[in-house]
Figure 1: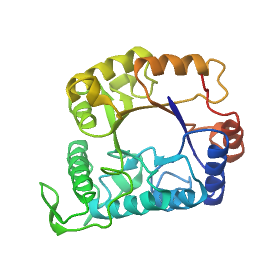
Figure 2: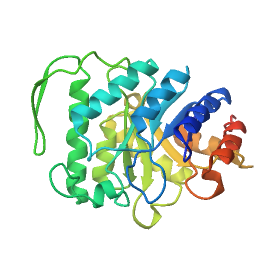
Figure 3: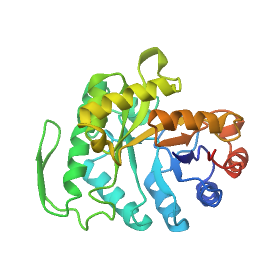
Length: 282
């Protein structure tokens, strides 16, 4: 099991400093988040922030929970990811989803270039974008003919440091078949539960069931090698953290990312204290 920490709020300087503390305290990854307009909260461009973090750290994995894909041009996204991949020496990962409608950049815009409001259309844009990212990582000219994007003879160079591409971790809603099928095609899954349980943490039994499903879909245990099963929740300073971590690891989880989104735990001073407590190594 590897452990990440989400930098929730604060200035960009505070976030870069927090990422350095994440590395020093023995965590395995630092993650930011991706939004444009959420009330009065400050929102920072995740790739610019991760570029600064890449230049300030040496070991930790870098990413965001999660990159909102449909409102981004795929070729621009490929260039942003490639840049941070090279700045970090191949430490970037791409947790990806359709975006939340609370962001006014999803529901509050119209006209040319606006993000579609419909979940089905945003999911289709996500799938096409992932296909383009994969093609762009090959270091050769590529074309794409889809419902939403048509690309002819585009080359994005050089190749990423990470091979065969910067790892893609789509959000996978368990047990939604289409969402799980999407995650199974890529390099990992950010686990979310469906329906009334969407805001709950998965149980170890949930994780074991979805891992068994993914193992079958991907073609057996050997096909799961290197595939990341990523959970979110709270571990730092929890008295039962090591026991919970062991149970999730036994169920097949490979990452637990500690995220605090509300209240005092989301503020910079408290975040530093949580990071300093370290991950629950067993």
